Image (cartoon, rainbow, N blue to C red; front, side, top):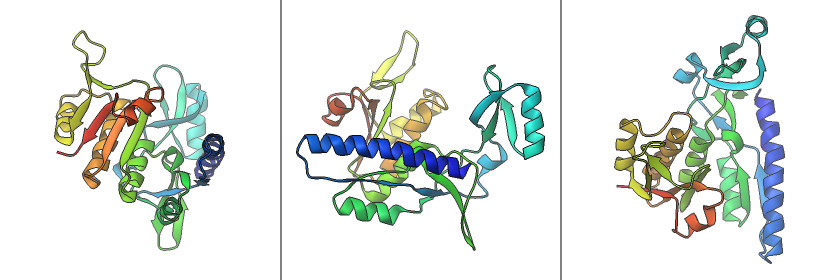
Length: 239
């Protein structure tokens, strides 16, 4: 499983870094790109390992899924009426192993693609790093990387232009800017759906709390350029 994550990081990173490289060259910008396959340290005692929730892999019928679970020692669950799938833990990212390499490249002027898919989850043991089957939330890993780098802005792209409260109701309202305290208040009201907007807002909070000088932006890919210019999107800032 960790090897599959590393392969995904590699091929998607290749595609992204090549596309970025081609674009900057077409604009006459003398920059190079680098893709770094990164490992992310997680805690063996993270409660997420006691309750795996992240569906991965192919759909199966119940009989096949339970037989596979018994034979391979994996956890399977029914997935929203669509069939059965393997589920793995989604632990909190603690540290990016290759952070120093990424920082050196950034300081050297490279455009770096890293932390793909949240990074390959690993345990840090006395004997070294050991990969483990898990899926780390990519927004939280990106927030960790951004705060450690001291990045001016963390940009999280999603399907909507702005974060909304009272989503899909007649009282729906777009939010252009909110402080960490305001974001926490909305979370307490249950305004953001788990598995959808909630982890994105939580990642932004983590980044801003660790690096208060920065700003976090949530918007869509189509609106990213306008969001960076301050024309749209939802910005989350320190109190």
